[in-house]
Length: 347
Image (cartoon, one colour):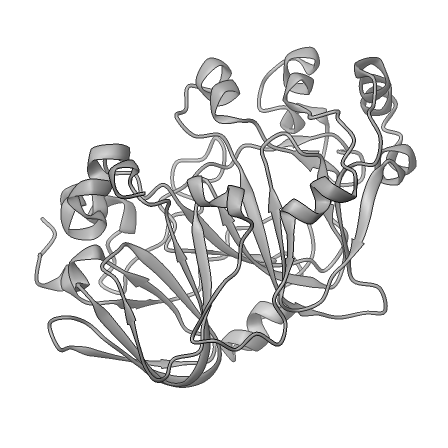
């Protein structure tokens, strides 16, 4: 059984890098101060209770005492998540946070909505996501988001059937990015991340991807459509063009903002997850909540309501249980604070 005493404290987590099909990982290693820059360690799943699609344990985070975080939360959900959250989401954290370091361009892909996931994948959650750019390398760091113009369903189907990578990528909005930029990616939006972009990624807690551009990335088409036929899978794609107004509603530029708490994500992201960049200086209170803290720079402490203090430094990734109470972040540091959506009764 999970000890309530143990779960009152924030916990610094080790790296958790399930193998991926694409290259990357050097920026994660540099942030953490580690020597491991494996070519295929481009994702660090932080405080994850989510498995890779079709796998029993890959992707799950372990606490320092050896327990799977998933099992610890299931054993004491109100301690970890709070009663209001449990009322809405049961024992799901309703959140997956990753460090993602794209050592090469990712393929064009998209993710299902909640409604599609319920109907076809037996899941309450689809996979809306958001990107917080925390580093870039190379001469032209970019991301790709949404079609520039409306695209007919038969056109998308043809591109996928012929694996016309240049047409797929060329149809998307190409967006230069720098640290401090954030991008909200609603379910269904075709997208890709360019080489040299290092992000903190917030997602709904699934590993559902429809890989439109699989050739050269996946071994074959079998893994590209989550076991669904092509026609069904392609219903996930939002084929509407994203004009300037739509892009402006999804993208924020926060570089240079140094308020103690800087909200990072577009307004429409709040029903899926929340994220702030924190600059605590003399001390900053964090309301009781399940959360994930990623320290980007500096050092300090996180003092829980019980009085216990967790030492923090650059590269630390921390899971904070609701039962830690009102915590105080102190020190000369910069951190990203990620949380699940506020329970409906408290919005």
